[in-house]
Length: 358
Image (cartoon, rainbow, N blue to C red; front, side):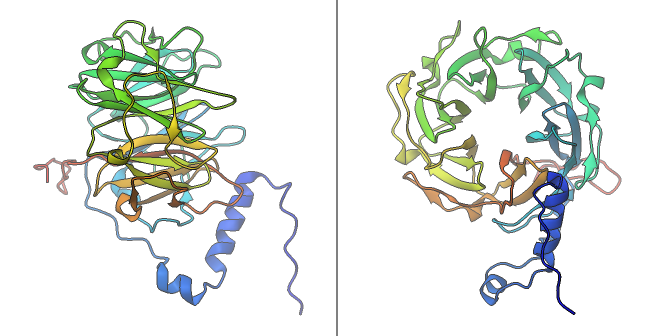
């Protein structure tokens, strides 16, 4: 009996096609080299902590899951399905926060919201449908979350970045006091894309979708009105911002699943904001940038809602611009967001009470 040929899957819905390809990858025989290089089985789960992995979709579905329910895999794996959402909706944000924390959210209409992590619906790690954010926030028609960050109560400043490359500095104590839905404009008519917290003493690293970046002192950003972080050309757009020091590293992740750790010691700062960017990573579609530390875990999320978790230490640090290494295997898919775990989460006892931080 002949084996039937593989049918054309181009007209099949993306989520069905991705599931079929995932099954094919699991059933396909692996080469000897691949077997020796990377075991298929995921690492056992970590000890329970208060850390939660939060996933938001573009059209406002949201869920949270205890972080220890996500198994670690090897860098470059296929991952597994996470938040269930139907096209044209797709995942847009992933972040890690403590259960007792609050989130800072900024919409595409530059309205700010503060939401308790515990208010989000808790769901399983894999193939789970979230709840509409509209049930928790007074969102308007067509309004969606553009920036999502864990709220750092003790932070000195909040830095917000627009797609057009404008950066604004906001005093940290003002953020938690904002009225629900208060206007927090980066600049009129601009689209928010990223944000970070800083102490005013270090530098800001701002990157574009084309892999260019600038680095300048935080204090160079005026408290009133903000300033242009970097000059953009053509179709390039700003996509990420992170606070850095000379000894730090940043993780840059591209839509094709490749990522790199860039040492700040190899990226000289500019004298002031508004300069042309230098090549930080060789890519045509950078997703974002975050400060990274040894021992953290990376959570990567794709447009087909597949997610993978692996140690950031599996990415070799570089001081120069490179194409990066494969962090997630993709088929007819692209990376849309990534997050890094926080350090020092309190462990949980079996009865659910917290114990001292490790």
